[in-house]
Amino acid sequence: MEANEYVKQGSKAKAAKVAMTVAFGLAASKESFGFLTGSLSILSSAVDSILDIAASFFNFIAIKKAEEPADTGHQYGHGKYEAMATFIQSIIVFASGLFILLSAWNKFIHNKHPEVSSAGFVVMGISIAATVFLTIYLRYVAKKEKSSVLEADAMHYSIDLYTNIGILAALLIIKLTGWTVIDSIVAAIVAVYIMFSAVKLSLQVSKQLLDSSIEEDAYNKLLKVLDSFGSYHLDFHRLRTRSAGNEIFIDMHLTLCRKLTLDEVHQITDVIENAISKEIPRADITIHPEPCHHTDNDHGECNSSRIRKGLKKLQN
Image (tube, rainbow, N blue to C red; front, top):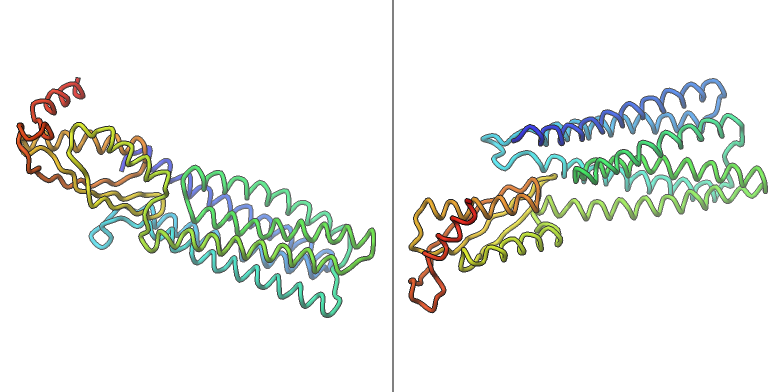
């Protein structure tokens, strides 16, 4: 693996460390304010932040494991550790949303409402600001590095963000209008959104665990590259693709002129592999060449001299 690839992967581990650091700061501040003010709601939010630390640490371990190179026991690498961690995270996120929904129903039935205090506004405001930064940062790195586990981590922290915004909005409305039921309504809306997002994420990452084909956009790029080298091969078949973490695996059979030398066949496959790698970064490509059944005079379908001239142009 090249050095710049290690740098890219290191940014994912760095993002997980930032998540743990921010979560630790939030947990410490909430716990301090909770003990000082005696607010049970703030203390319970601190416990949630402690769970966030544990989740981010789990993701950090998964990322480090996924970065390990292939070995005798895992010859295709460890990329699926990241996908597996994402799937587990999606289950945790769904369970969190379900818990919020049940809590909202319990509050509605028993007519419970949160305490309105200045300390609550201050702590929730600080928490929202820090979580907004963390969520944006994690989503940026997740999109840049195509990391499903960081996307799941961002979703996990977005639960805190939406919940805290909902709490602030509910506190403000209760203080202005005295309409306590709004707390349950806001919580239920947030919970449904969280559960929907968790299901969407689990379906998305399950494609990696089940070795589904790569995304349509990447697949179309692959076909375009193969078509652009149509003058060097007769056809391609048994084209198979899958992804694991941020790695993509591609293998195919390529029919080439039987009169080409082994060295020339190797040159053609190398050129095609390099072209695919430029369009689809992190692609692990395997091409199995097969000899054609034509001769130089068969309808012009196979012309070794023309292909050799084309190879010389590519080399120059």
